[in-house]
Image 1 (spheres, rainbow, N blue to C red):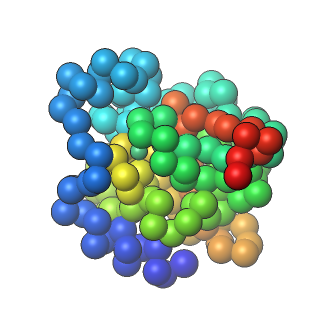
Image 2: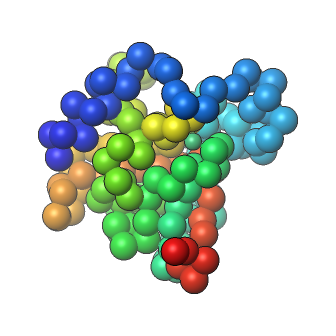
Length: 148
Ligand SMILES: [Zn+2]
């Protein structure tokens, strides 16, 4: 679990393989997806399409399509946000320290486009003990049958 945090720190330079202007992002994202991915908004709990979603498949970044989480790592956290114990691969997401709202939290973003996904907390279940608390609006789900 420590590796995830160290990789995140290295990505804090804010350069990503996919970079667009705010106008370009607005043209391709819904208003809610734009607010979350590009402005780090947080959707209201129990409102998004994926907090209570259990189908097998892959959750990709709604901004660029980068696969970021999968259903095997999803669990019911009771928070009203989609929650995962781990990303689909360590280098598909980045993290950085977030000092907003007077709290120290670890922000989680897409490693390809830098889009804000949510936060990770050290109070998750095994095997990782981590809880990736992710906004539905930042994700796009693909059924397992569409994979491979
Ligand atoms: Zn992305």
